[in-house]
Structures are given as C-alpha cells and as structure tokens.
Length: 308
Image (tube, rainbow, N blue to C red; front, top):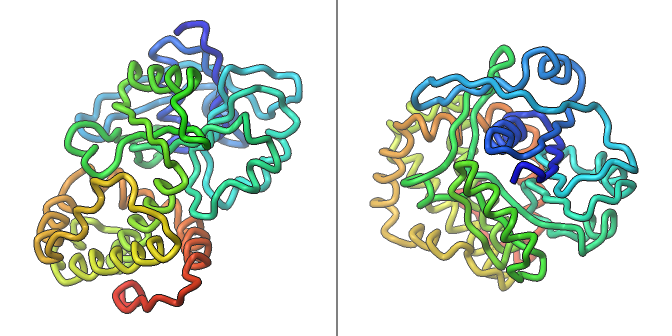
C-alpha cells in the first residue's frame, strides 16, 4: 500500500478527511490546495478532529497548487463541489494519470466528464463522511456501523464491472477506516442520493441548518419523507431504480419514518454529516436542485417538496 501514489484534488472537508486517513494508512498522498488552505497545510499539515470523541490528529502530506500535464498518480481523487467541476475538467484532461475518481454530487450523468477526460479513466465515488473546517482544523465524521444504513462510502465503474482497479480502491479505503461499498449502477445511485439529500437540505434550511431544532418538528420531517417520495417518482418516470435498494425504507408508513428521522436528527452524526454540509454547500444545493429538476420531464407535482 505504501507505494500507492494518490492525488486528492480539493482540500475542503471531504478532501482533507480522505487525504489524512489514506496517508495514515501508508499511501503516498499529495493534496491539491489553493490560497490560504495551501499555506495552512504547508505549515501545519492536515489537522483532523473526530467529532464524536474529539480526538485530534495531525498528518503530513505532500501539497501542491497545480496539477501539471506530466504529473503521474495511480489515482486522482476529485473531491470538489458540483459547481466547481467544469472549471477543473480541462486541467484533468491534460494530465495523463489513468484513474480519475470523481467524488462529486451529480444527478445529470457523466457525458461532460467522459467528453473531457475519456470514458476509460473515470471511476465514480461518493463519501459517507462530513464535517466542518474551523481555524484550520477539520472536525469530521465518517459513516460506519449504523450510519451505513443510510449511506456508505461507495465506488463503481461506469460499466458496472468489478475491475481490478476498483477492487484496489475499495481495499485502500477499507483499510483506511471508511467501511466502503461497491455499486454497479453508480448513475442510479447518484441520482437517488440527490433525491434523498435535497429534501433533507430544504428541511434543515427551514431551521437555519440546526438539526436539533428540526428534530422537534415531526410535521416537517414527515413532509420531508413525502417530498423524497415525490423525487423518487421523478426517478421512476425516467426508468431509474432506487439505488441502493435499502432506501426503499422510505415507502414504509411516513409517520414511522418521520419518528426515526427525529431520533437521527438529534445526533452528532446528523450535525456533522448533514447539517454542517448544508451550511458550506448552499450554492451546490441550489445547483443540484436545478439539475435534478431537469429530470422532471413528466411534470410530476411536487406538493410536499415545494412546501418544505
């Protein structure tokens, strides 16, 4: 594992968590960072603090400000927001590293990415992790155990095959403490993910991204569940199956699911994996909503979603 050379493109919360944990596991990690974050990491390394036990750790990695054409990495892991991706595709296209792992929200499909960097180079992924950066320290959460019922760090090939490079990536993340999964329909997985997170974000924004306040509103959470079903209906109208299938729990009685969400929203997990992200990612959420609604070609009524 120690000879695995990886570039993490993006030094936000997810990029920092990935880079720190993979480096700790012995991977040769370089992080592409910019501005103040670049200077911060050059001086102090990556400073992580587990949000559940407040245990801090400092990890030194390589840090660069640019990706050059001739830089070679076994994997480039792209960990940026959806609304940043178009500006970095030309940079990735010029570099010839063979494996680019896009860890980016995407309900639109992959045509733009394929046209830019080539079909054969792309791996799709998504994290079960989150948090916030305060004064250079990333307070983080990684989804394991119970949290995997909702989402696990997931990877897949565009063609759905279980390739050697995919198995190697899975192994690296498993040994680094991420409890990952492999999915053979990542396009469906990502579209379903956006259908789930948009109602959660809208519900949180009603309470200024305070998950503990949202937990007090059974009515809002029940409407959130019903809104998710509406977005699932959009997917079904496009012949997209809910992926992973465990998310079909949303079709249990809405009142029961709302009660479960009340319990979930009272946790630190919800604070760091959901609420904090809605604060940092408000612009991305607006972009994702526009992109997802482009799928609503049948004009399915969104009574509950619009009412959130």
